[in-house]
Length: 337
Image (cartoon, helix red, strand yellow):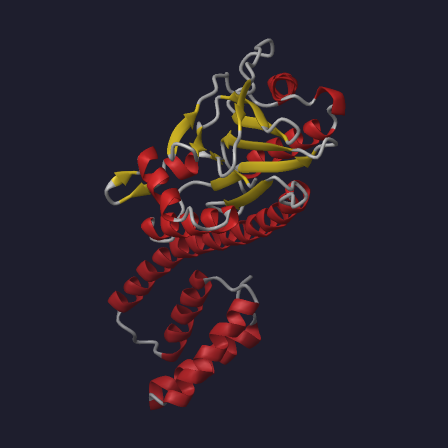
């Protein structure tokens, strides 16, 4: 939109007045005119063009070189105006995208939210999961079993943002649809692997760990689909061991079979599950070693599992100067009696 006659006359009056007086109050009138021009979507090049016209009307003998300089300024403002409009368009799209991501993050939180079970008398549980950005590429979920036990799923999408959140939603509802009689860890992963392979883009993979605690015999059975190995703490010997389990990541081969493993838990034994956002925590000195994670857990072992995971997270967050580079999930299951 360009200047109309009324705006042009207003600009002429204000400019002429300022040339005569150099009054700051007149400058303020110019500022208000600038805001009005913005409201009317008048471009910077239109303002320069009208400025040149008005100057020529006020001073008929203005030097030609000055007019040439205004022509040059006009060309500069044309490019500037195009860049400004493009920038404003991008900012508007960015605001829309940010709003959509915020809505998606809230939907993800509602869809994938899980409660830490408090009805397993022989097991204490602590969990913390913090996204590096708005959308969480990590996922964990607890399932109360009919026998008084509990199952735990922890997964990590190789890929972030809204596509990762959609994958996690699919995983969650696929698990909910499994028959109760067939929810042993190896079957869960084989079923989910088949779903992921058929429905997820080949560029995206999902690592996952699924385990079930059986209070009747104090066994923890589990299987892994390429997920970050956790730890098993044996209280009787005060030692940590890697919770090894072999298995291909979900989505590569629909026919793959997953092995199932088990650990017998005794009083004060712990199962520590995590994602690579914990083990690949980067500091100024480089990546943390798994031994560093163990040292942190040892530091807080006198606390409850929930207090341990929160304390470890705060320490690692501080080491990264409160800028998480990857989604962070840490879960501890502790045999209480």
